[in-house]
Length: 332
Image (cartoon, rainbow, N blue to C red):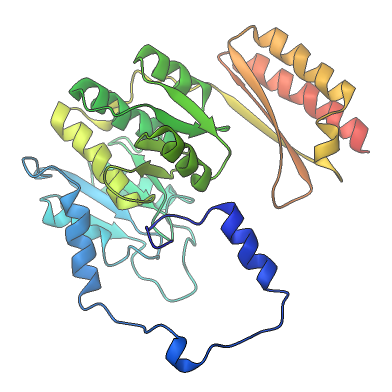
């Protein structure tokens, strides 16, 4: 939108409805004009740097940043380098077809190898369009969006600058919700998708939210999700507290989460099936308040996603399998 935010569903649906109508054209005098912004790259680098506190820097920090052969290939290294870090960029040679191919937030193995080889303090993996982020510590251990959001929220709470609460999604790990309770930070879940995180943030008047996939939104810094800016917020927390990534995230113990995709013709109708409801109740009873069950139809495939998480992995796996078996029996 003109405000730099994703369009709401209602606007997108209205646009889609127009696609089936006859094509019409305005007269040329009624059309807008395209303008090229000189030095857009430099301006954006400076904008990213402006979200990091001026009294801090990244000197003495060795970073490997993986740009996924995507949008940040000529941006990310410069941002962290100009803030003082020793930076090695990988996945920064796009050829038009290799975006996200073996690199980036969705494929972090090359980053893990580079972090270990170069003895880096931190690894930063962005995705192809630059709005997702995962990070690695010095040992090559991966930290997802939930863990990184926790690091940011915990630091803001400690500094007394936590504005409102935090928004996650239906897939946010239950351990994160419990961690927010311990920190006395309000927490709400949105539907899966960063646009829905944004909607709840705007409804609540809050600033911080994200998804475990790595979309992190800091509305006090930007109007939308941005992997570079989210990484800078994590680095701010680490530098201000003198902590490593492992230390900053150590108090968040993620619960085992099992996801089983079951092929079905009509996922929506199965959610109301008595046998499925009974299987869910049985699982929730077994978890005894130390886990949760989520059944969610896929938005793109004929699948019903069965997700169970909790403190006990064996129990979680057993509960997920039982529910999935019930769904398969009904779908057969």
